[in-house]
Structures are given as C-alpha cells and as structure tokens.
Image 1 (tube, rainbow, N blue to C red):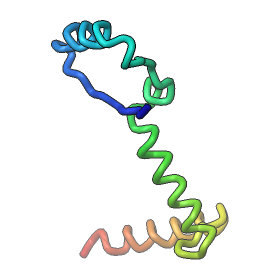
Image 2 (image 1 turned 30 degrees about the horizontal axis):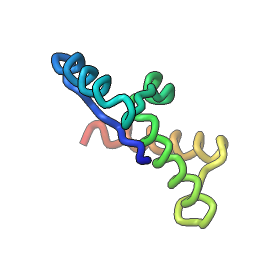
Image 3 (image 1 turned 60 degrees about the horizontal axis):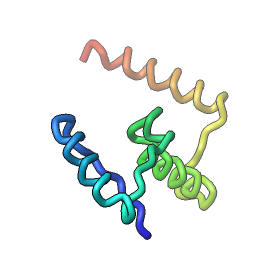
Length: 85
C-alpha cells in the first residue's frame, strides 16, 4: 500500500468522495493532523532537519544568544551609519 497526499478543488470534493466511496475496498482516507495545524508541516520539518544536520557537521554555525545580540547590534549600527549614503 502507498500513502499519497491529494489536494482537491473545493468544487470537486463531493465527486472525489463519491469515487473513494465506490472504491472503499482499495482506498482508505484519513486526515493528517500535522497538516491540519500547518499545511507546510513536512516542508518545515525537512528544513529543520537539514539545519540540525548542517549545525552538527559544521556546515553552518549557530550563534549563542550573546553572539547573536552582538552581531545584531553591529548590523543595526552599520545600517544606521549607511542610512544617509
């Protein structure tokens, strides 16, 4: 058995459900709670897993809160200094 994600135009839902009901021995419909709360759940999950992997293997550097605050302070100072250019 395979699991697929299907997007259905609102105007076609009833026809699709009729098809599913006629094929009930071959099709099971269930709602994915993750997608109910966040339609981009799996894309975000994949991105987060990549960030974690990159930080663990040293591809990217994660800053401490202190480092981040310092970097942002420098950034805003530079931004303000270049505002008049």
